[in-house]
Image (cartoon, rainbow over all chains, first blue to last red):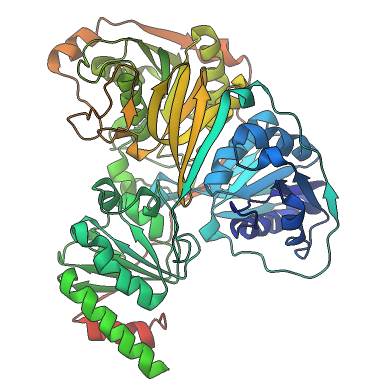
Length: 327
Length: 276
């Protein structure tokens, strides 16, 4: 029997990020194989306050490592503590956000653990956890078992429903920060330039409106009204980001954000396989493109062959009318 | 500056939708797809070249770039192409793809780094076939070196690098001191995203993405040193710890309908998909 440790992720303001709830879901799915409980580890300068947000999810314990030196996340400062706490567990998980992807392989190496990154599912084979992983830009899935005494894995946020509070009150326990190694003395946090946006987070939005290079300098002029009408997040193709029409952190695709909203608009996006890998899990896909042969139409539920500079403003008007009628 | 660049060959990324998985699920069949260097590793090689030159005179190497791969003899083609692009020498660790997992690759690279003693190890942020995003960070931990992952900009400073990293919701800037491990993201190959201490501020590379090797360089690359090592000499008897028990193809997504205009689209979204 072995227990599972979930590493929580906090926002710059010290609140629990929703990515944490997806990692909790992964832990719960793996639990039947290992037969033990799960606990949550929170690190940061206000870890105890954040830990209090996580006491209602059924964890055996919520461990809080509160230390001012953890104010700005740097892997070399976090990994020694995560590994020291993780030693007592059979499986250590986090969300495959940029935080989890940066930190967890380092933790795995410290624990001499095998690693399954960016998993889209977990199943149980007797006492083995089987991790399902997207590969080849989502054109294949591999089911992998890890053979080390401790295992480490990260969960693709869009594939694990965020855990809902299940009641109860897990005890909060303080843990001390472990002194970092030589690596930490040679890395310095300089700045985090956060892009401020009133829109929902791309990874968490129910509706995503994504644009391609065809939008040119009018990228935001065209997409903002549509995103406003639908309370949507804005995404972009790699071509639009590379051309400088949209910032890099909006990129949807194999190497950008992986999203799976209820409704996805691909506007002026032809549908390169790297882009499709980032959005094909969406429930309903709408494509608007003036090229009737664009590959995106092979997977869209609704395709409209039209000039997007006319179609998108018209769509905004019709959606507003629809909303007004619906009340 | 001495830089070690780790490269992996992958099946042609532009045709990953053509991979075949037999009904028994025992493998991913990439037959018919051309082998290429993982795109992110190519970007790492370009980054290494930019860091060891004055952008104005890219033919003169002001440092040493060593390209490394793990794989069968055919992967020497990929190493020769790295040499033609500008790397000084290459090392191939003789093995096969199915004899490797992330832990073994990281352990083998650790030994190579301890032998070669570079100031910097560069590689792509992930390989586009396995997509595990593991080796760079694991290598940094094994060496107890600082790291900067998902690098989108790099500026050389005295004794280290200033690295802009693409993270959720913005850009995180770290300063790392040598020796260090850096994994690179897409935008590292923008014309002005990497600057060595020799390259003038404001300099822009006159091409998109990565440089190509001119024909004479391809000929010369055949004479550059390429050493071969045995995997067992680096990692001893270490064995695989990740075991893929099954592969499967994703469920096919069928093409939907074309709508004639915006009005029909809104009507279908409301009544059929119930998405608005």
